[in-house]
Image 1 (cartoon, rainbow, N blue to C red):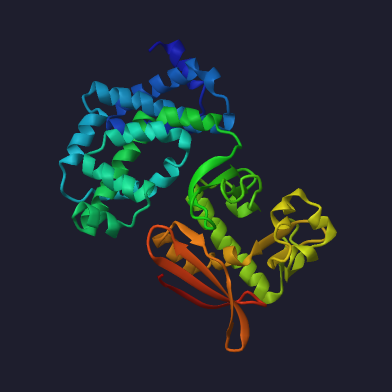
Image 2 (cartoon, one colour; image 1 turned 180 degrees about the horizontal axis):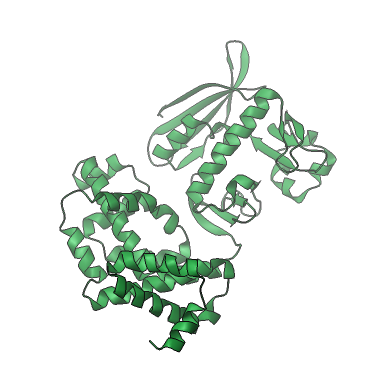
Length: 396
């Protein structure tokens, strides 16, 4: 490489970026001289294709995507291509090294493969896996089957299945971040704010995956069911706690935890801080007919028009006109016990409420039935305060 070319490419990155690139290439090549050559090749390619960088905020990801491709070409030239790597792993019957364990834990398959536009890449990556490993991954992350159920289907034990899944995650990480890394980076650079199909099931009908619209910069996270509420946003959130997150399952888990803490604390204390301005505001249980006029006139309230007598927990700020509202069933599903049930039975439908009396107190029985088996979750709440009186899981 000429001195002029080196000067041009070096001027394209900061010293700190170059150090990080060198560290990355050194980890791949295990040779300082080779790593230097790989860095120079990366910088030259980046310089030549600098006009392809459309989002300066994704500059580092774009740069390291190029470095991955450069290192992959070098590995192939040395005869260490992905197919050979997969063959080696498919013959191993021992536990993965501790470093691989760390990589597998750090790699969230559900997060990486959620976007429906990446299904083609997923098919290509899965085709490279050993059949048994591929089956275990598909059943665990696509069909969302428990490990015990997968083991029973495959005629083996849970430990063997867990090992296959662990090994498969390591291999998938290498395939997706090395061989297909640039393709994924190119897609992500073009992704905009739009409705996408998520791996989350609607808890009302249990028949459709939820649609979501997420803006990580604003913490904006909207959800709706294409069957239950195709034209109305049923879950609308603008929270600082959701900013910058990746993956719909992680987003939903964070949202669930936040909502449980926020609403339960507010109901217990009678007031809570407004999420927009921080002013302390009352927490009440109201029907839409009791909402103030400024709230009823908002377009977002269309979801409540068809349920004028539905009582809901409301946090309304008269000062900045911000609002947080949730009905009983979503609130009941946000408890720790409910989330444990949903992890074991991710696809449930909401059954009709039952009104009853517990120890002389008016109560509401909310029931959630698994779509895939006979499991059912019963949650009894105080009708007046929504305080939980009893939770039980069993079979219908």
